[in-house]
Length: 364
Image 1: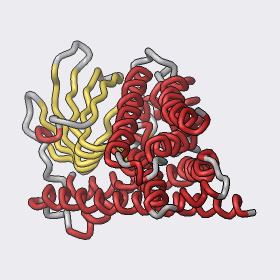
Image 2: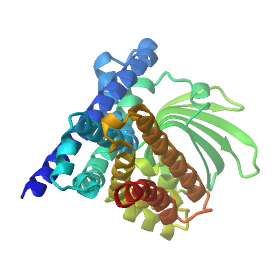
Image 3: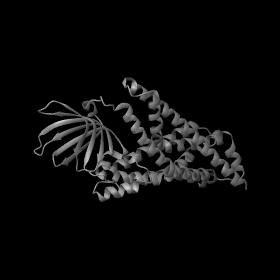
Image 4: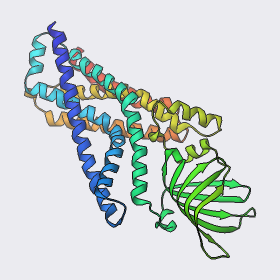
């Protein structure tokens, strides 16, 4: 009875500490992002302070997905360090509880949080990310934007049609590539000779063609021509466009199997979608691994000293796990490593990093 009550208490303390860290970092990232957007929008007529706030609020949730494991790591360390500082761990030890009973409630809570983050938080964050792209397109991609400015960055794709080939550059992409903003098209004839350049505020993919909105044509041998609406023929399918312009991070967890199947049927590489799917499936285990790492470096009693060294060691261990995950992601995207192995290897290393010290300290 006492052990069960203490376990629930430790679990609540861990959830409270992790939520506090997550909310604090969320507010800090939101503030920094909003300030940066206000700086960027200083010369934009369409970008108001309210619109900039909307962009920040809708895109920060996805940024926080990447920070979530560190929030759990820091929250678990704060939880156990506070319990040790207030001698609550000493009292629990005297009641016959082992380190595994300290850690188990937090591990279970982390698994639960990971399931919620994958099944609920990720779809919401992906939807908000798409909304932020629409707002950003409204704020920064107005009709007066120059095609030369848009060609410096953004998305590129080459296509063919009965009229020849063309190269499309887009400054932004929404609706998984179906709608593009800040578009510049370089047209070539069947012989490969440059014919004209087309600039448009937006491009919408429809059956067999791109519909260019508020377009302006610049032919080689004729004066510029302004068009309210222009059709650009294309042989690209919806699957090919999504593979080119969509990023796996903007696809909801529940939609990823459909995107993987669609890419496979179209004969396109689906490594990015497979990796994202495996990462989301492994997220509960990753958060649990972060709890084990935190416990390995923060269960030492305050009276033994060396607390600062332990905290620093835990943060370094978390950072090394992050570096390992980025390396495995790059290998998977280059098709040099299976997506499942790339997603689960950091989890396996994290579990070992936490379990081995705990086994040594607790069971000798």
